[in-house]
Length: 114
Length: 115
Image 1 (cartoon, each protein chain N blue to C red):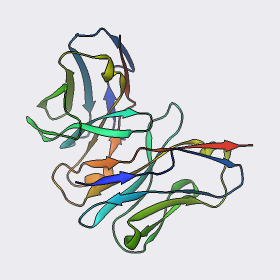
Image 2 (image 1 turned 60 degrees about the vertical axis):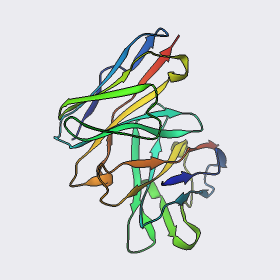
Image 3 (image 1 turned 180 degrees about the vertical axis):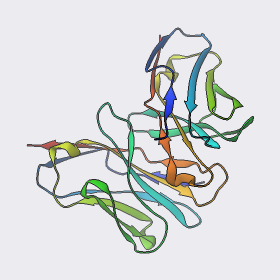
Image 4 (image 1 turned 60 degrees about the horizontal axis):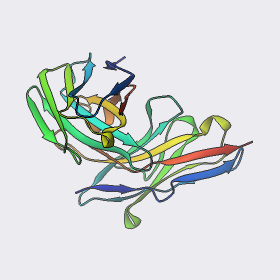
């Protein structure tokens, strides 16, 4: 089975800290995604990447950046964490072959910024 | 830009009753449509999908959905709800063969099941 692993299940960070959320997939998928999930707003796309070192902004990129130096790893960076970034963050991946049909999601990281 | 609207934030249904969840999408081309379920404390699971062909699609757990192009809708239904169907349901849309294969999700509908 494809696995998408997010390094932390829960994180508590202070306002102004630089925060790294890590995501690793083990099935050689080209496409990787970061979403945030908030009640009533569903999942909103922050950034995605369709190849190593390639990245594109999603719908809500402000306050975030990403890094994809290796195919299996996609990192989300909060340059200076703020309380409005308290949320559940979900990573996902899929291959070019299966497209949107083959999404696999991680278990999520619940980030609290205090 | 593509968008998805789920008009109902919460729905409460009695066990054994039928369930219908609404989904409307805005998209210029032929959409690729999905329904996902997220049970409490669980990850997202794909229920069903539609791209072409028969507009009534069957999914897992006894769910079905109907694509209506004229109404830009893709509503999810289940004839008889079980207590285990209590969860949050998300409708999503993608553009077929678009670079990156990104999914756009609706706001979700939380389903509560009364005994």
